[in-house]
Amino acid sequence: MIVSSKAMKQVPDQPGDIEILIDAQIQRDCFPGIVLLVEKAGKIILSLVKGSRQHHPRSEVMTGDTLFDLGSITKPLATALLTLRLCEQEHIQLERKIREFLPEIHRKSGEITLGQLLLHTGGLPPDPHIYRSFPDYRSVDRDLAVQRLMEIAPDRPPGREVIYSCTGYLMLGLFLERVTDTRLGTLFRRTVAEPCGIQDLFFQPPLEIRSRIAATEHCSWRGRWIRGEVHDENSWCLGGDGGNAGLFATAAALLELLSIFDSQGQVKGIRLLSSDVAGRMSGCLTQGMGERRAVGFLMQDDGSPVGPSFSGSSFGHTGFPGTSVWIDPEKRLKIVTLTNRIHLGREATDGKIREFRRTLHEAICRNYG
Image (tube, rainbow, N blue to C red):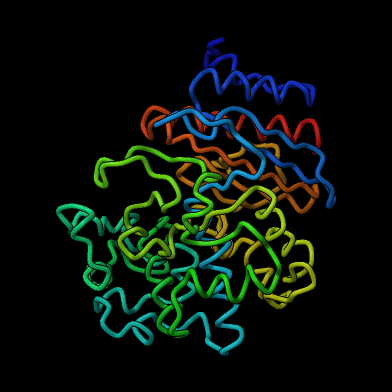
């Protein structure tokens, strides 16, 4: 059954209609499959697994333990979290400039503060296009990729407006690496995933579990279907654990990590952040600068990717492969939506996934909020 855009905008009135909506969008080729978890007041109230893990090069059914490339959800839940944790532990002020830690960085970029990088107010270009420095994937050299990143200058003066930037978060990833002398993926595993006992949450998935990972798209630059390696080309050039993308997880693992916002900085009894610092990830810090943003996360505003029905204190993030998380503290809702929509083509599904997110979240809010 093909569903028109007009029909899709009709928000379901009953929980069962959410499943009908999802089935229709799978038929519409919005995404091959989905894992959806909705938590209310600490209890899972909706769990749906639908469709296929991949269509190409062979069809596989979606399962609840499927791992997804989270794309830009990496920014808040890995890079921002680790930056806040490190700065708190080492007493590094967020007002300090990035050149103090990356002295080889472009002179103008060096004036940007850590806090501005975290809030996307550094004035840096959205995409550094590092991979374009290499004629093909076989010629990628990580040291040269880092050098190319360090050569990038801001497009606009820092501290004036929000300009969403993968460039800035890649720089934050290198900040973490430089200060700790540890790669981002290893740092995340040692300081977050392992201490908190969260399985199925990591960078650079091992080969033996690739059969559980949802495939993304066919990459013309790498000449193959991407499965079990980061989709984002810039992160891939840095080894798969760039600060902008590269985290993989199941929906259940994400919910475990998101419990940090219920317990003032703790996950399963392990303190990752102080309550005050954790609050920076869930409160608007960019008033009057365009988008409402907390550290790492987008706050609810007029351009919300999930529709208008959530409270002003709600926050979350989307990921380019087709993923999203959204938290509403007032409604006590957490929503984890994992798809691999780009398996069907990034351009072909871009508008569809945006419309689906809003319709789905409006339905969830209407039925469970």
